[in-house]
Structure formats: C-alpha cells, structure tokens
Image (cartoon, rainbow, N blue to C red; front, side, top):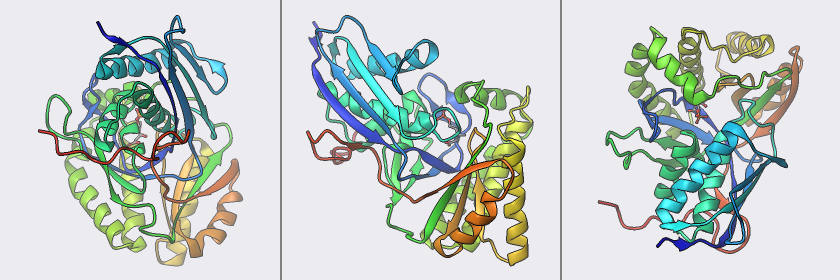
Length: 350
Ligand code: PMV
C-alpha cells in the first residue's frame, strides 16, 4: 500500500534567459533535448508556489495567479504531481497555489520558473529531499527550460545521451556574482501576443519541417564552447556578438518552420535593429540582444552603458517598460522550514 502523503512547502523559483537555446527534443515524454543549452538565471522575477498534500483533500486543486486552473495548464501540473507521488511511493491529493510577479505566457519564461518551483515544492511537501541534480531532472519533465531554473548564475543544461535521461540535468557554471557589471535589460513590448502554440509542440514542428535545423544543431557545440569561454573571461566584445548570432539562428529555424513561427512584434524587430545600429556606430558591441519564444527582448550590456542604452530603447515605438535585471540565485525554499536552496549533492549516482 502506498503511504498517504501529508506535508506542505513553499518555494520561489526564478525564470532564466537562454544564451544558447533549447529547441527540439529526441524524447518528448522524458523531455530530452537534441542539444545542450546555457542560460542566465534572473533575479527580481519569480514564481512562488505552495504545495500541500493532505488526506482531507478529495482531489488535486490547482490555482494559478488566483484563478482555478483548467485544461492544459491544470493537466501539466497534475502530471508533475503524479511524478512526485511515484518518486515518494505515496498517494493522496494536493493543493497547489502559484503566483508569478511578472506577466505569464509572455516570453518571460514563466514555464521555467513555474515548473522549477512546482517540482521543488511538491517534492519537499511529499517528504522527498532531492539533490539539485535530482530536482533539475524532475523539473525538466514539466518544461525543459525549468531544469536550468533550479540553479543560480550562469547555468548549463547537458543534453545527455542516455535513453532514460539520467544524464540530462543542469548545473551552475559560474555563480550569480561572477560578472557583477553584466546586466540584462528586459524590454517589455506592447501587444505581445499570448502564445497560441505551446513551445513543446512548436519546437517539434521545427525539427520536422525546418530545412535549417540540422545545420543549426551541427554548429551548436562550437558556439556553446565559445560562449562559455567568453563568460569565463568576462569578455563583452566576444559574448555579445555570439549571443546575437545564436538568437538569429534560433529565429531563423522558427521562421523556416512550416507553418512559420513568428514570435516578434514590429517593436521587437525595431529593438533588434536599434542594437545593431548602436553597435555599428560605437564601433564595439555595446549590447547583445536575445529573445525566447515571445516578443519581449533581453539586452545584455555592461553597467557603464546601461543608462544610455535604456534611454535609447525606451524611445522605440511600442516599448512598454524596461526592467534592469542581474544574474540571480536559483530555486529556494521560502517557508523557513529548511535551509534554502537544493539539498547538497549526495554521492554520485551509478
Ligand atoms: O521549456 P519550454 O518548453 O518553455 O521551452 C523553452 C524554449 C526557449 O525558451 C525558446 C529556449 C530556452 O532554452 O529556454
């Protein structure tokens, strides 16, 4: 007989922005990507999720941003609860409440922070004490990019090779304090459409139909290594052009997908053009742009250039606001019941 689960936990998890994108899976059920990816975990923004397992609940209850969840959103949360029950060898219903302090489904990676917070809160509430690596693998099952939001700073998610996915998890390469001058200006644009196709489905359409996808994959290991070296050396002259090259490659495979995937608005495109013009005029890379499967744009720049860049970008038609964000910490427990952060690594797994 599985034991009846009871317990409660609340976690905060941050979104992340990918410098090398995850786009395409070799196993959709286990969420195993074709390529390794690299991201920066963002401070200031967070999903806060509370999970309570209790025998008094008749069924799972899911409330997202104050609204009872239905359809696909509810189903995705229930799938994660099911994985946690299996891991804990337990049964019983749970109540899940989650809130973001930023707009949901807007290209600000709410699925990454949402599933990182859910995996951490649900596993802790069920009495599991998972290592960072185990949590990353669990969060990956909810949304691939969530594997990276478990950790802070500059994070790499290893694609892995094993069919069971045991070697597909993220880790911190450099902590949040590695490069204190580096900022991400998050440019929120007006009229960003709410996603009509889930990323998980959109990326598989790219794998199937984009004639550019194979070439992108072949070039990624080299680009990833160069981006890692540029971060290690804190070299904006190397990093910013590489980040833009990677973003352009991601956009190219989206646009050549059938039917075509277009996540940008005219203002997003104007921002990319403004950054190209600015870098040309300055004769050096002042900023590097990137975006995910959404219309908002992230601009990496150094502290000394941030003020003038922000002024210039805020003047682009259709820009709603610009948030200044730094690399931040990973997923943390916030109900004071245990040390924050994931449990320390246990012995290596076989
Ligand atoms: O984790 P998902 O299913 O939301 O997909 C994320 C895909 C991108 O954000 C576009 C890229 C990435 O690596 O985060």
